[in-house]
Each structure stands twice: as C-alpha cells, then as structure tokens.
Amino acid sequence: MFRKICFSAESGIARITLNRPEKRNALDAGIIAELREAVRQSAADPGVRVVLLSGAGKDFCSGADLAALERVAEAGVLENIADARAMADLFGALRHHPRPVIAAVRGRALAGGCGLATACDIVLAAESAQFGYPEVNIGFVAAMVMAILRRSMSEKAAFELVATGEIVSAARARELGIAQRIYTDAAFESEVDAYISAVAAKPPAALSLTKSLLYQMDGLDFSAALEAGVQGNAIARMTDDCKQGVRRFLEKR
Image 1 (tube, helix red, strand yellow):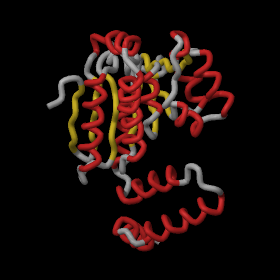
Image 2 (image 1 turned 30 degrees about the horizontal axis):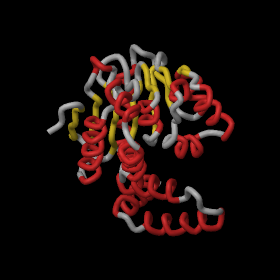
Image 3 (image 1 turned 180 degrees about the vertical axis):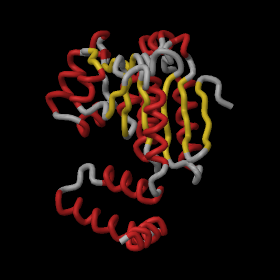
C-alpha cells in the first residue's frame, strides 16, 4: 500500500518513516498523500499510544523535490491552492491526532521538511541536525508553517527564520523552541527509542486529553481557557486510567 514511506504499529508505537533516502526524503504529492493515510490509520488504531515520524538515511526531509517545484512554477492558481491545502491538511492531521506525534530529526530538515517536523508535538534532534525555512531565497513563502511557529516562539524569532531563510543548528533550534531534546549522533537512535517508550508507557487517556486541551486553548482568552481546563480536569477524573492511578498512589501511601 505504501511506496514512499514505511509504516508499522506494534507495542503501542506507530512508526512512520519517509523512505526516499536517495532524494533526501523530498516531498511530492505522493509522499504527502501516504503520510496523511499513515497518520489516519495510526489515529484510528486504539492500540497506538505514540507516533514516531522519522526519515530514512542521512536526512529527515529536504523539502519539496525538483519535480514538485517545477509544477509549482507552471501550475495555475487552483492547482497551487489544492497542492498547498494537501500540506495544510497533513499539518492539521498531526495537530489533531489523538496521540503524541514525535519527530526524530537527523541530518537536514528544510523547507516543507522542517515544517513537517515543526507540525509534530515534540521534536527530538541529533546534535548535527539542521533546521530551516529557506523558501524566501527562491521567492517563495513558508506560509502554512507560520501558524505553528507563531505558537512555538516569539513573533520576532519566527519572522527572522522565515524572512532570512537561515539554516540553524540543532542547538539553536532548541533555543528557539523548535526542538525539545538534542542527543549525540552516536546515541541518537537508542535515546529516541528510550524516549518514545517512556511516552508510550504513560496512561493513554491522560495523554490524549492533555494534547487535546492544550491545542484547544489556541485563541481562547484567559477565562475561556480556564473553563476549558475545568472541563478537561473533570473528564480526566472519570477515566479508568485516572481512577486506577489514584488507587495505586493511595495504596503506596
């Protein structure tokens, strides 16, 4: 079913891997459609507790491939809108996935590839990883990802990234809020496995409610966000995960 990605789900972990290493996992319409389907399948699987998104080979994703860029230059308005909307729908699917989605970035994550990583809930980076939105250098705009960057960092930091097209190191990406953890290249795979296993071990209902509530608060004023928190708190108390967790805690005491 999948030709340009690899997908598996076992032991609570769904693994989605961009599998075009010969093209630095560059994006085209086919791979975006396959990513969207893998995200849909993992969201529908009640056994999945966490999703790991990674790239085969040396790079996470270098952005759009050359053929896709050629089509952009030749396409009309409606075709370009449809193409952009496909990427936006993928970003939205990652945001609304009921489980945490974690990107494991080694090598380059550039343009749409950096947007793909940024759209995930957590980014784990190898120390040699590079991040950037160089679209401006060819007269393009890093458009959809701005909705995420504006929620991840300061306005000025976001503007500098997309306006200069600067490629930044993993350390700088962490300072900006793009990456949350950095691991040595040698230990990257084992550290990522340990991290996602720890997340997968958390109570799934609590993780799902936490993610849903956090993003639900986007755009809410303070009072509305507090009220959303009240509702989320009450719902969490009624889940089996919470009831069992409280019992275990009290028994230890």
